[in-house]
Structure formats: structure tokens, C-alpha cells
Amino acid sequence: MITYVIPTRNRPERLADTLWALGALRGHAASLGAEIIVVDNASDHPPTVEGPLDNGIPVRLIVRTENEGAASRNIAVREANPRSEWVVMLDDDSFPLDTGFLHRLASAPPDVAAVSADILLPHTGRREMGGLPAVFVGCGVAIRRSVYLELGGYDRAFNYYVEEYDLAARMLMAGYRVQFDRWFRVEHHKTNAGRDMNTILARLVRNNGWIIRRYAPSHRRDACWSDLTARYRQIAQTENAMPGFERGLSELESTIDDQPRSPMTDEQFDRFIGLAQARQAIDAAINEHTLKTAAIVDEGKHAWVVRQAMRELGLDEVPLQEHPGALVVGTMSPGPMLDAAERRAATAAPGSPPVVVPWRVIADQLHTRPDHLLTGGSQTQDPSATRISA
Image (cartoon, rainbow, N blue to C red; front, top):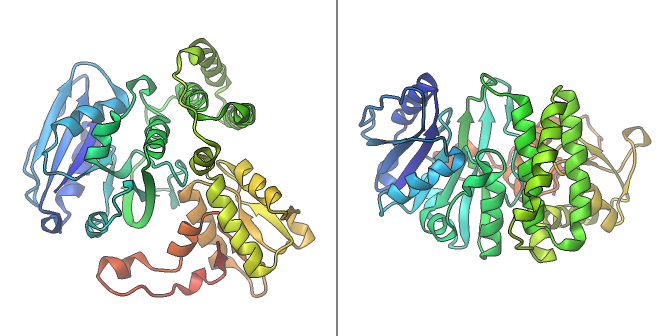
């Protein structure tokens, strides 16, 4: 059995659309049933939730008297049916496109604590930008209920933004891992309505700073601080949200000493930031293609990790106009990594350099079509991905 968990606040129409989409899903009998728990985060007018849905899934509503942010999910997990092995975390504007992922959850290795979805943004033609190889995105992830309860769930101090990084870090340190599954497809109807970029930037700066303080080995914190400030200063300038950026720095400075220190080992931290995965994938590409030079393209989150892995392995970065031996996708976030790899494979001219995806899991999954697995068919080669390498 599985439990869908959906926090919501002041978006009854969007919630109704999401519940309708969940009610259209078929195939939950294979997982011995499902339930939905909606947690209202102190809406001005709590939503009316009627159940069961058209497919028979029962729905429960839990109304909270204060806005607990992402931590409202904790009460839902505690209240979930004890027979639920997995809790599927959604937002009130996200939902799975099918139930083909259920049999994959059932066969997940016991050390997999979370299965992260391929999260699609239908109105943009792109994927969700967050996450890392060892970090899931909270609007589309299945988490083992026993592990969630064992680790205490989300830290309510984060409210929203970066709370997944904190929980994923604790999973990693407890010996678990996060598994990305392209065949677990979630549609996220993300909207900018009500989104204040100054508030978002302030939260991102403060909460990411907390992650560095809590988990980064002492000798690696300075490099992380530099990347944090450079990345979010640039985003703040682009989004005209410098007041939020400055507020986040101020909040971080006043709270940093209160953060508990649980530094990871270097090996754990390399996995957490994606450096271990980038080293493995780029080293494999160097050996496969006898690479000496490469250009970094489609830069995004943790592009600095990709550069560091290239430097460590002796792969020289050169500009595109110098005819590099390969093109290395410059992000460690799964969604943008897939977008870049698929786009470049579809437009590659004959004789163009290979595209190197800095995470072998993504490169491997690019060579199969999700629809074949969902219908029970065998894995087949995707011709558009033949020039993608790990």
C-alpha cells in the first residue's frame, strides 16, 4: 500500500484539479491499494475534500492551525496507514502521470530510502530545476515510511525550500541512498502566482547556508560559501531581488551559530554534492572517447562540481570555438541534465562531439524509453540517445 501526501494552503482550485488527476489513475491494486492525506496549512478558508475519488482511493483532510510549511508532511506520515510502505510526496499542483512506478518501488533495494521522480513542467516544455544525484525534489518523490519516521522527517525550521537537502543528508549519513527513476513521472503545474522572489531568495540563501554549516567538512566550507553567494547573487540580480538576497545573508549570519554540526566525511560529501558521480561519469567518457579537451555547456546548479571533476581527471576545459573533444553538460541537477542531453542529442549534426552527461544513471536511462517499461515491454534502444555517454 502507498500513501499520497499533499500539503496545501489557500489554493482550493489547484488542489481540486490535483485530486481529479489522482482519481483518474488506475493500477493501485498491484500495490495493495492507496490513500491520500491532504494537510491544510492554516488556509484562510480550509478546502472541502470529498472522497473516495473516482478510482476508489479514500481521501483524508488534516487541518492545521498554523502554517508549518513542508514539515506539515510529518503529521501526514505519522497518520498514514501502517500498511503503507511508501509515502509519495506531492504538492497541491503535482501528480504522477501513471502508476507504472509502483512495481518499481516494490523492487527497490532495501538501502534505497527515496525514489526521486522525473518532474515535468508541462507549460514550459522543461523539467524541474532542483535536486542533485543524492537529493530528491519534494513535489515528486516516494520515501519509505519507516525511514522517514526513523529520521524524524522534515526539519520545520526550514519551512519551505532546501528542506529536502537536509532530509537527504540525514538519509545518506544513516547509510541510505536516493535513487532517481525516469519512469516515475510527475507533472508539476507550477505557477508564479503568489511567489515573492525576494522571500524565495532570502529563504534559499539562509537555508542553503544552514546545509553547509550542518554537513560540510570544515576544510570545504569556504568553497561552498563562495559558490552559494555567487550563485544566488547572480539569480537575485537577474530576478531583481537583491533585497531578498541581502535579507537572506543577514538571517543566515544571525542564525548560523545555532545550527547543529554533523559534518559528513569527505566521501559522503562528495556523493552529496554530486562530485563522486561526476568523477565516475567523466572518467568513463575520457576512457571511452580518449578525451583530452571538453567544453562545458548548459551550465546550471553545481556547474562548479563538473569543473572540479574535470580538473581532477586532467580533462582540459576549452571554449566551443576551439573544437573540443566532447561537450560536458554543466549541471548536477537531474531535470536540467536530462533536458540538455535530450535537446543536444536531437539536434546533433553528423560528426559532432559526443555529449557527456556527468551522472551515469541519467546517461543509462536515456537509452531506454519509459513507455516500453510502463507497458511491460522490454527495454529498447532510443536512437536519439546514441551519442550520449556517461
